[in-house]
Length: 64
Ligand SMILES: [Zn+2]
Image 1 (cartoon, protein in one colour):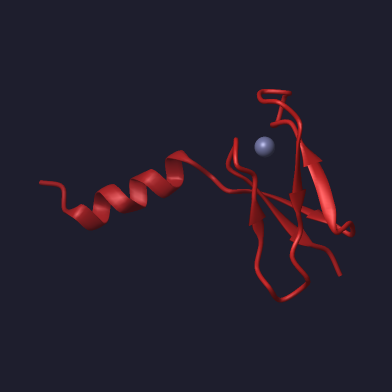
Image 2: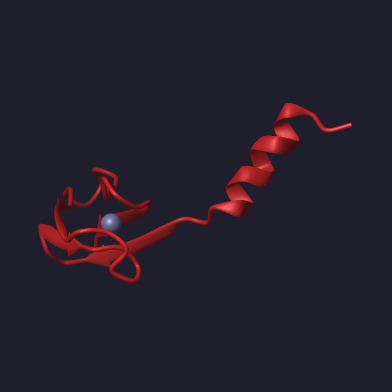
């Protein structure tokens, strides 16, 4: 028998996070292998979390 908690844990393993660290205030993303049109993503200041691309699940964080 599988509980809801078990399903949630499985989902996280199936879709590992991709986080890109950058010193720039904005970064262009076109997917991991040009899988979507190139878009610019604004990267928040350090301590303000991350920005996520609207097309793919790549997250962008400001590098120190
Ligand atoms: Zn993207």
